[in-house]
Length: 65
Image (cartoon, rainbow, N blue to C red; front, side, top):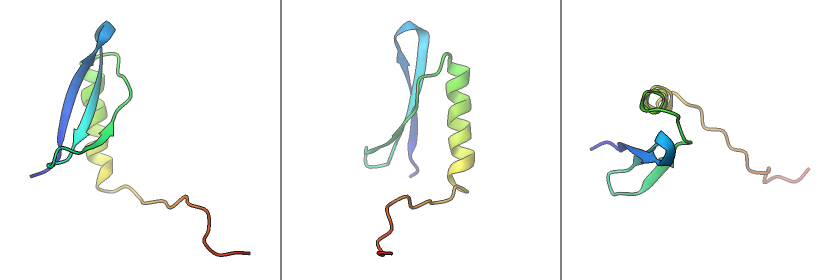
């Protein structure tokens, strides 16, 4: 089974989504969106980009110079 996107309401009519793994681990939480349509667009963007996203290692280099 794949992860689950949950849309949550916040006060003042704003929304956010949470991506949860099959085991219940929260993988990601979105910023706040002003309406449900924007939250759904955010989910769509994550779905489209996650599979093709690059992995960038930003840790300091382990080799000394």
